[in-house]
Image 1 (spheres, rainbow, N blue to C red):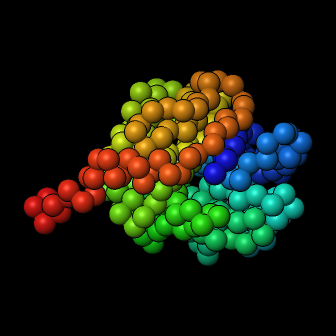
Image 2: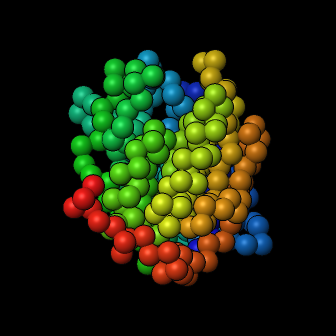
Amino acid sequence: MKVAIYQMDIVPGQPEENRKKVRQWVGQLMQSEEIPDVIVLPEMWTTAYTLPTLDEVCEGERNETAQFLSEMASMNNINVVGGSVATKVKDKIYNRALIFNRSGQQVHQYDKVHLVPMLDEHLYLAGGEQKAQIFELDGVKVGVIICYDLRFPELARSLALDGAEVLFILAEWPEARQTHWTILQQARAIENQMYIISSNRVGTYDGVEFCGRSYVINPWGDIIAQGTQAKEETIRATLPLENVKEVRKNVPVFKSRVPNLY
């Protein structure tokens, strides 16, 4: 599986401008020598964290961003982990991840379960009400979580127990907690013996500097590709998925679990 991560800066509150940026980025990828199987976008990439005005700029009934991502997938024959998008359903706004396969079919969505109390997210967003589930891209079992979800090991573990070999993490993680960002991802990779693919934004907004450093981490916890702290860029990697089975065989933590004693 070949992946390409867009570590992007986000134009606050301007969905169409951000869609233009993504369209141009995908166009550049399609002109490259190696076309990816999967592209990955960050959290809240259409609006950024413009929480007080989300109701004015979020995805509504027209589903413009979902249609855009579907077209990007089908036109270019790529799988799209479409980041997360502030999406209004009735009177609630969810932080929603959208995933499309090569034919442009939406194969999964996930609403962020854990809302960040430090940002008063609960005043503007509704938490997800459905359990995170695995899905498949090109026959590979994968999962997706969003930013603050990374701090809850049981969430990633539940996906691994269901067979996930790759976990996508979509984020707007701040530089102030960069150490946590790196260590927690390596921990999730090691304890669940799976690949971690993260897409984080760069730049600043409302006095917050974001830490970039989008990662590809293998099942041993080794960082095999990473972005810089401040640069808008593409991070690429090829995942030899047989490594997941090899690591799980050599260090059989799932067979060694004794959950009735936990």
